[in-house]
Image (cartoon, rainbow, N blue to C red; front, top):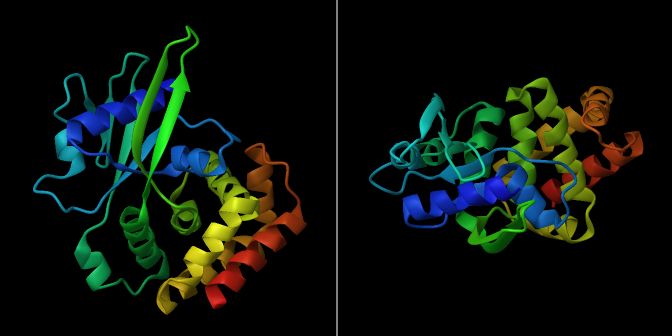
Length: 237
């Protein structure tokens, strides 16, 4: 955690503004509990500046490219992979015919546009502390992003994404926020959320349960039924 927060500080200083954090760190912030470890930092770039986040971050001394959408940033505690999830306005203005591609664009844009400031603190084993204030995705966008992300993930991350959705949906405070936020989305996006929830928690419920348990999640089939009920009801409102 200390290393991730250090990387977040580097990104803030390099970009000259707080990034919009999504992914595992955002889930930890919203749940207020660390139900799993996170090793990477995920941020969203809406392409509103002259240079992309990736272009700027790749110029950090000691940084190295590791794939087309990520950079490895050095910190005092070690290197951290920073994934930059880019969404351009054309993807919003001219949505794809594919529900998955469409939800990828709309959910990340939603996360960026509605993120709120969160203070994040961490401590090293030696007792050193670090604190940053950055923008963090709200629960509703986090659920939507993760519903779409599962299909493009490695086997281990399929389980953690599904577990994140379960935790966000069943946690009292996050559930209330996610429901209200999903209810307020446009009809097409709500339909895409409903389709993805049905796919993972109805059509592929047994597969999803196996993946979640492999990731260390202590859940049962009834939990997945409840998750789908909550999301489907919110997306049908």
